[in-house]
Length: 137
Image (cartoon, rainbow, N blue to C red):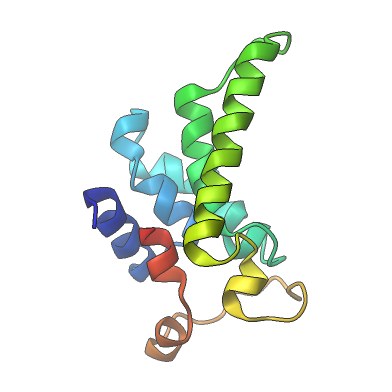
C-alpha cells in the first residue's frame, strides 16, 4: 500500500480517530504541523462527532482536499464546482472500494451513534473494527 496509507493506519493505531489519521498523514503536504492538522480534524471522527454518519476517513480526506484545492472567494462558482466534483469522486471511490461511506454501515451498526464518549482503545477495539484498514484505503 502507499506510504500515506501506512501512515494513516499507524496514526489510527496510535489512538487518533479516522479523520485525524487520514488528514494527519498529509500534514507535510499541507505545510502544517501534525498537531494542528489533528486538532482541526478532531470533531469529524466517529462519523462526525460520533454520530456514525460520514466516515471519518472520508471527512479527513475531504479536509485535505479543501486545504490543498479549496477556494476562498465565495463567488468563484467554478472553483466550488471543481472542489465538489473532487469530493464526490473521492466519496464515490471510497464507497466502491469499501461498500459504503457511512460510518454506521461500515461498522455494521443499525442506527446512528448515541453518546459522545469514545470507546476505550483496547486490543479488542482494534480487532473488532475495520477502521485501520479504512484509514489506509
